[in-house]
Image 1: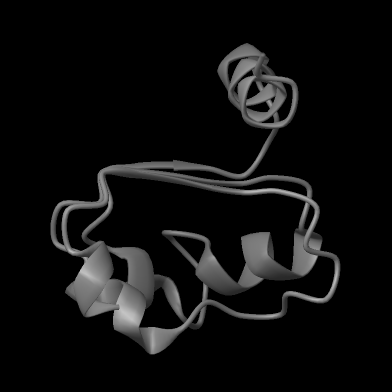
Image 2: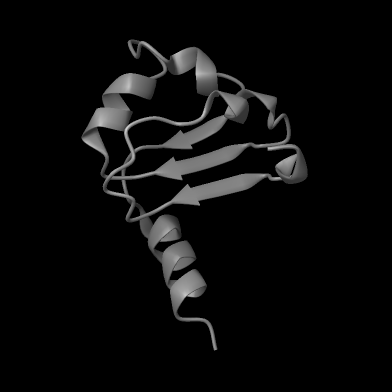
Amino acid sequence: MGSLSSLRELVIYDCTGLTSLPEEIRSLNKLKTLYFCDYPLLQERYNMKTGEDQATIAHISDVHFKIDRYMCWKVESLFYAD
C-alpha cells in the first residue's frame, strides 16, 4: 500500500465478498475518512468500541458504517461523472 500513502479518504462500495480490511491499512497515516457502508460483518468486526479488529482502523478519525447523503453523493460522482 506504499503508493497509497497520501490517501485521505476511502469509500468501499458494493464489495459483497469483502470480509476484512488488509492489515496494511494501518500504514495509511493520512487516511482520515473511511466509508464502508451496509456491511454488517465489517461493522461488527471494526466497531471502535467492541470490534475484534478495531485497532486496524483506530488511526482513522472519521469512520462511517451507514450510508449518508455525502456517501451517496460520493458514489454517484464516481460512477456517473461526465
